Amino acid sequence: MTGQDRRRVLVTGGSKGIGRAILRRLSEDGYRAVGIARTRPADLHPDEEFYECDLTDADVTRRLVETLAEDAPFYGLVNNVAMAPLTSLEDCSVQDMLDAFQLNVIATLVCTQAVLPGMKRLGGGRVINFSSRAALGKENRTAYSATKAGLIGMTRTWALELAPYGITVNVIAPGPIETDGYREGNLPDDPRTKALLASIPLKRVGAPTEIANTVSYLMNDLTGFMTGQTLYIDGGMTISAVKIA
Image (cartoon, rainbow, N blue to C red; front, top):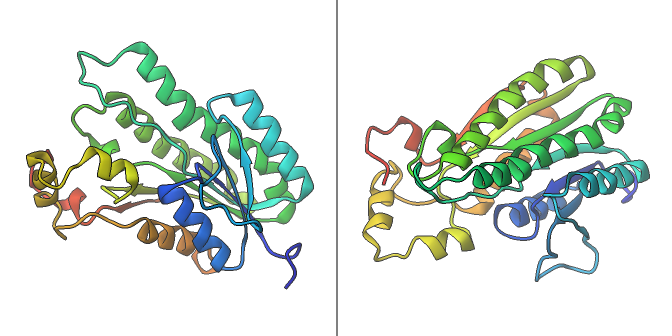
């Protein structure tokens, strides 16, 4: 199979962490994985397709994704990019809410709208949106929880609208994942880190590759009967009665 024959998949926020792992896994699966993010990955390979884009700028993002989709339609879209303001209710500002909404919700909307005509021409496709376990509630995450809960509602609506075209739309909602951001904010000896680990039934945080494996599963033809669903990949936190620190 040539490069032009392989199905294209677009991954937002693909420069590091979970997004980087997703790009690698999809490439291993044989897809033409295309990444976009504000900055290029430090370990970008010469044969990788990657574009720099400020995803908080809806107009710039739409133009880029529409241009990429004109070159060849995308079969899959992984809306992974996100930001998480860490503020209490008292300290959460209107700007915090607007910033989180712009990146977590508007960028998802714009990218999906831009790839949709091509998916319809292909006669099917996969849209995977990223929410979070925090959508169910987490202290000091007002803006983040609100936007991530909103993504679940959007996904269920889109699943209904796009089902006639053979396009499935699902959500992955990770719990704590061992990315650079997690390690920077959760020092091993910090009591809050220990309390967090104690609240996870599996007693560990997840790996980016485990999230990438779930993306691979949802992208597969064999999962074409699943749509509008939210998969919590969180080590059992959503079923635990332990208070989350």
